[in-house]
Length: 227
Length: 227
DNA sequence: TTTATGAGTTGATCGAAATCAAACAGCCCC
DNA sequence: GGGGCTGTTTGATTTCGATCAACTCATAAA
Image (cartoon, rainbow over all chains, first blue to last red; front, side, top):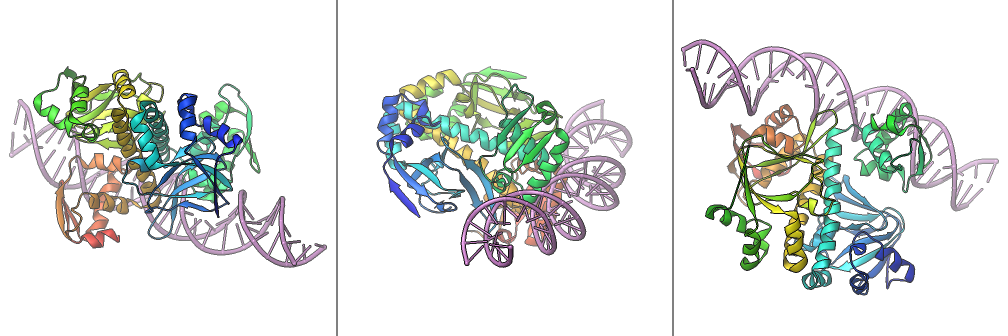
């Protein structure tokens, strides 16, 4: 079930700090925010499906969104998980206006929706808007390329180690953090079956990683880097 | 060995028809072309290396370029092969000015080089330039996401079948084309070892595909789609 | 307290592709 | 023609992760 609303104050705050809009002067950002609508989705709602006409692209305000390809035989492959402040599906502004992937709320989410036509119009008037969109596209492109390289070079435990390291403060040698979403979602993001993720965590015990529910504890960050 | 030159007439033609510049009015495109330099590389020359400062991004004029991640232990994973008219490494305009991947000429290539600073300046003055760059980024993003999905959903023979189908005319039921580059390069692009590509071609014989050197013949396009 | 439900783990098996090794084909050069 | 050199193929083996199935654990519902 979707509810569409205008932004409240808190949502506006989040949006202005998002990767996309934070690149802009506040005057410009506010002009865009004025044309944004909010969509709320319950857990596991479809947001859009591949093949559908694309009228919007999105920035996540709260929750996590799973973007995936659905194959002919019904299997799904995740191509990205997007959280608060991240923008997804901006590609539809240039690829003929059709979604090439499916998107689904992993849990209850609120999304800011940008109208494609409106944003195109804005971008054609103000170079700064195009540049901010480029930065967002570029960020997502880098992540996708990183993902391809990671898939092709590293084993399951190594990919999990990488993910953990991305969530550690840079300098400390021991750390602890909480997974922001379900393990099954992380598995998909890393291109693994849930069983493989579980086994990968086991394998990382020897490198000083311990897992209690969603809490990950890292005993020795350097050991993990060399795994 | 690199030689840097100004564009000749033929190269200018190719460049104006490239995915990036063809999005622009010819006046705007010509203004950009005026600031482009040409770099020629022999086969297997490094073009840039990951970690290097990035002063340029590129459009291929002739030949093919291989972009890849080099891992700590010296293995390489391709993240893209770029041919005539395609633009690569535009991401460096926004990711802090450092190359995150290596690029190498697969064979003798000529490249058009755009100065990052100059292009940023142009983009901040003329919205159309930003939009053209976005289209290029968007194209490369789509390809990268497609690649992730393909890797994760399909077996080696299926990925090869997909590649072949992309090179077939849409309607005909039998077709024939010539690989534009070495099989080992194709293997890398598809995330396969050369041996696996070879075996994948063998597996596709049963679907009516025959291979003689670089010539690929497809007997039954529909059979290939259902492989 | 039971029962149900969903997430996660553990075990056993299977399959796809990497790896290692060797044979083979084309091609340029002497 | 013979000798490299490179690219490709074929064969044997191994490894990683998917898959299927059973089981644990926690939480919610009855």
